[in-house]
Length: 334
Ligand SMILES: Nc1ncnc2c1ncn2[C@@H]1O[C@H](COP(=O)(O)OP(=O)(O)OP(=O)(O)O)[C@@H](O)[C@H]1O
Image (cartoon, rainbow, N blue to C red):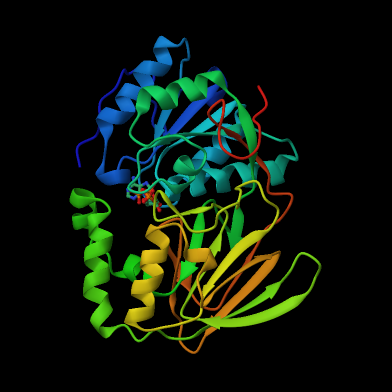
């Protein structure tokens, strides 16, 4: 992949000399997100400069890089750290900000988004359209904020959706080159390829509810969500909010291709959570296990295998920069 070229004044690599404290705004960009969209990023940066911002730009060089980059930006006094990429990049930047917050005890920078990933669930949830770089820059400049509470899956922060079932199997099997060129169609193709051999193994989910009540359910697909959205613009958990202090759990009890087809239709029409055979719960803590070490996905990336524990730590609170009138909470001006 060719390295994108931007104004050298702001194109600072991780190892570059420019420090975050010189800039109120540090952009951490995953150059591979959404198949690589250097032009979108260049437009966003140009729009930010036109609005009077002087963003520093740091590129990731591989998976996981955004975590130490975000922590470094926080240590160096950045006011806003912007994740330029998809949900996986946002989750890494959030993880770095939370690490810095735990280390220093200070609230640290706000989290901003320049959505350029394949799916961008969190950005869509807060009303920020993907691939609209000028609009995203204006939102960053206006600086309205609201609470984001990432969940943790086996200790690792996630910002939108974690799950186990056919969808995590699809994430495991997806062809990276095809995803780069076709985006979400690569997920559909992987689903078509996985389906004939998929056995719908049973997944056990043990939940600790908000009043410490305990419940165990078994299903073929379990979604543990921060966001109301799933797979992009589709509403799986109406009413869920990324600032909630609980996990929203969806258990699809039935297995088999006909049931999956029904659930798929329910998801497309916004009725999934109320369907027969679908259980919805709010939980503080969730334990997932199965007979086999099934793959997990979190924010569209593989996140290890079962068994797993997911929880929300109320100390994991970030300020998220949002549009002036997002859905859900009313933002407060910075
Ligand atoms: N420079 C890089 N080279 C390769 N992979 C990277 C790089 N930087 C980050 N990554 C990894 O790329 C993965 C996918 O990124 P991201 O989720 O942002 O984009 P996406 O998959 O296109 O979008 P979405 O999650 O919204 O579908 C992340 O888990 C991240 O760890």
